[in-house]
Structures are given as structure tokens and as C-alpha cells.
Length: 375
Ligand code: SF4
Image (cartoon, rainbow, N blue to C red; front, side):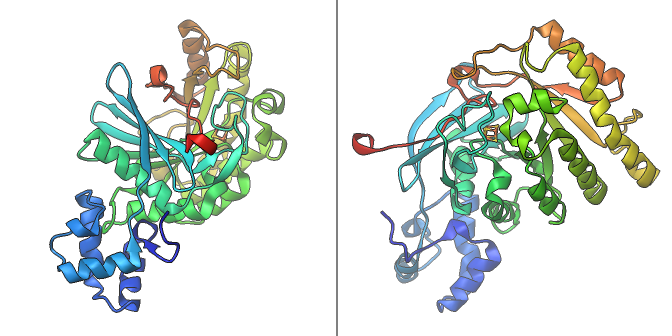
């Protein structure tokens, strides 16, 4: 167990670390050297930071630590493109992180909580309940470990779509994002990071005021309260129409595109009727934006459709979990759903998840706490 009095370097941004160094009597520029080792060279042991004197390395060890979780298991998908890491945190909570390679994209899917309190029916992450929020360092370290273990030279994208609701851990999430975004730390562009939310409206509003150009994905999964409420209990607190209105305001304020995620589950939310209803639901967003945003900003993706550049829909065929006994629709049904949205001017993509064979696809990640002899 690490001493609680030691400061975890991964919990601090570049400026914070500099200030901490100053406060403890170290030369502030040393902070930059330590961050180089950690974020650029993947060295997490002060003893190996060879451009620091031996004396300094020993002194750092007395004030700071670099806490890395234990890798309990690593699984690679059959196609070799997905790597799932099972990580044990200091208090024995297990979380999962996934690295996905696709052409020239190297993406890490990061967990933000141990467990989840939102209990979406189709998702494994909330099935064991909620344990706790992750700290900023526990979020950041997942990206570092995925990069190192996958031997990916450069992580190009980070998606907060792993275990937990990111916006329910708002403070630590934002802290981690700023560390990952900082040129002096991990240095990935904000536009290359995506927060996925089940629709926590007050936090969507808070995010719109951050002034950070991050991507936002909102899980809809149903065009009305009956369908959505049946699979997403969060809909009882934040109903569909209020959520879409909050998204409309978000777009208006940030001038950024929102992606609506829609998991297609046969017999639940994937009929033609639901596709038409979803089209009607999203039309309102376009109307607000078209009236109030200058034409230059209207179609940022070059599309000439009424929804171009305002929002897009990402259809995700359901990835089975044992607790939700349903199937994805057939390929033809998926294409038909997509066609209906597109014929209503909504830019729509279909994401066929990777890593199903190692339970690493969307909705399949789990969190547990080891107890007793498991430890
Ligand atoms: S989809 Fe997201 S919010 Fe819903 S249970 Fe899974 S992790 Fe939680």
C-alpha cells in the first residue's frame, strides 16, 4: 500500500506539478523533466530517470509516487485489433480498459468509475452496482498502460466509454482531460477525446461552459420515454425531450456537433416506426441551429443536408451480455433503420463493434471488487 502522504505525479497537471516542486524546494523546471519521462518515455520509476542526479531521485521518492495499477489479465481479440486490460487498483477494485486499432487510429476506451449506478439494461458495467469514482490519476494511467502494453507509438483518440458514467465523476474527469490534453503532459488534442454520457443534463450544461473542444456523444437508445425508459432508468430523471433540448442548447452554446449513440436491439427499439420517430425527435435541433447560427458555421462537415454539422447518429448493433437476453437486428434491418434516418437528412453511421470475442465491445465491460482469497 502506498503512503497516503505521497503525492501521485499522475494526479497533477504540468503547472500544478511545477508549483508543487517549488513549494517543496525543488527547481520548478525539474517538473518538466519528470513529465517527459512519464508521458513521452513511459518511465514510471524515479530511479530510472537518469538525467536527474541520484540525490534528487531519492528526494523525489520521499515526496512523490507514480502509482501504477497491477495488470491482472490481458486479452487480445482474434483479429489482433483489440486488447483488453484488466487492471487492479490499490483497493482491489478491478476495472477494464480497451485499446482498439483501426487503420491509422489508435484508440483507448477508458473507464471513469468502478462500477456504475445507472443500470442500463443492455450494459454489463452497471450489473454489479457502483463502487466508487476513479481519481484523475486512475483515469490517466489507463491511457499510459494501454499505450505501453499495446506498443502503440502514438495514441490518436481517447474515448470515455468504458465502465461508468464519465459525467457522474465530473471533477476528476475534467482534471484527467486537462492532464491528457496538456502539451507538457500527454499532449493529445481535445478534439481527439470523446465523452459519452447516458444523459446527465446538469453536467451536459456544465460541460458546455468549460470552453474545451471535446467531442460529446449522448446515448439515446430510444426515441420516446416508453422505449428509452424501459432500458435506461436515467430516463426517469432526465426524459428524452428534456435531454434533446439540453443537447440543442449545448450545440447552440459550443457550436460543436453532438453524436447521438443508438444501440439497436431487435424487438426493443429497432423498428421502422422507431426510426421515423427518432428522425422527428432530432429535427428540432436542426431548426434551432439553422435559425441562429451563421451560414458559414452551419455545415461544418460540408454536408448539404438540413442536419449537416449539427448532430449525427451512430447506430450500434447490440453486443450481447448474459443479463439482457436479446439480439441485434439483422443486417438488412440495420440498413433500413439507417436509410430512414438518412432520408430525413440525418447523417447516420453504423458502428460494428470490435473485440466481441473478448467481451471488449461497447456495453460489455465489467467491474468487480476482489475480496477475501481473491486478493
Ligand atoms: S451504458 Fe454507461 S451509464 Fe449505462 S450502465 Fe453502462 S456504463 Fe453505466
